[in-house]
Length: 634
Image (tube, rainbow, N blue to C red):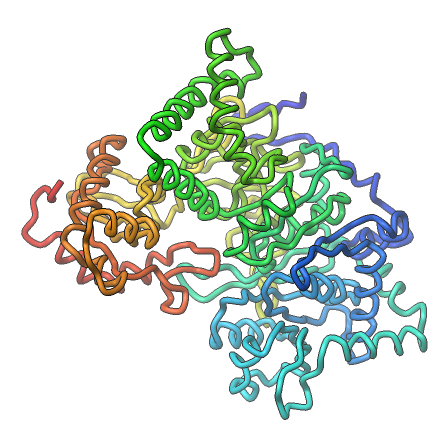
């Protein structure tokens, strides 16, 4: 086992580098060049009939082989070249997750161009900003619904030359063509110039720009992070060096948006270039059904996915007759006692082993079967996850592996891995990456995974970089003696109370969200004597409780404002407060009668809170919660 040794410096805490012994040589073919499309075409040539994707079509799961995807990639790339796309040009993709997204992405990259990702949930002015700022010449989009967002904005995107729609749209705009028409154009171009595309592919260098991913903009306008082919391939090789993928057994269920760097690099690119088949989830409302149908072994998800799973399991248990509820709680307690020993690979004492076997047979096996019965592990990324949720699932016998990274680090920089897991941490650094803690607690990263910089029409903006190559991540954390990294919060999000206490709101918010009645939480208390919170409610759980209690209501918004609901939530928060130090307890709450909304500028496409905007929006609410209060209500 390779172990990172801390290097102690005078002005910083210890540095943890990890030796890199990647497996890139296994998938390297110099004549194709070291690039994403180069490696992909190599794999397609070596094993054309291997299953690559599973897609739900007309109610049935169908397969896409490497050969079929390679054909689509070649046609799209050649079609783009025929339209005049040059190496280094920008092309944006605005679409939900679907197989055409993958085809378009690989087609753009194979042409030597740059993919600019846009979330399907982005609204018109956000799309316009990204297209204009990036200088995208072409835009792929999925449906008439997406086209309608920009239909009236064509004149405000003057550099956008062509729109390629996956599905036909009704329009008089002659610059809009279908994907089918583009592929036909590509076939004609290939017949005319058969060697042109592969010459483009071979010309791509690792240092060339691969993609521009716009940060979520929690505090200001999005910034276009520039990620190279070399960044992506380094991360892929590093991940493969610490995880043993079984290409004949593993199936990856793809859920997060492809515009998200974790899903695209840590999920899609990693799986494709590791020969792991990918099943494309039909949508967030179909996760449970798709899991049962596909029976995946690997899932990469945001904490909200696992919070919903946790809440669903809890709600189901609470709806059972008393005897079954007691059996569930007994089984969970057994699982929690067995969990630390299993994590360390130690044998269970005889009686605990017997209890564990019974708990699994009567309770846990049924839950695991709902996840398909083949899950090796979940990976949680994109935001911090509550340690309680990780412990709960491990008690059930399901491992959640937490990692850490950001757009600027090309997805993961650290990750727990089977056999080397410390719950509550985000794991050890990837091989080849260095992490250290600055004097103020900020996490600094250095390595080949670091992005090129932020895009600017005037040139590359290297904001956040030190001369020695260290990048300031903006996250606060600590390293333990064994090199496991623990994240505290975002540097800019830390709350400093009137008493001078530094408080990480995300930890408290994650605890609040473990309650089955609470869907989201925003904690406030900067320069105040105590903490308050704005909460949103889980509609299914709260309406179910209200019906059980015989409380009549017209709609969920009206129910959320009822005094009975407020008393319920206050009581639940009081119980959760017992798990917190006194200065971190919530003293007063305000219940919102709706969910936080991306359209209202309150959350990002990845469900992260836009704190600055939320604090400004609810400033009067916070003022009222503090008015005339010395020590709060609880």
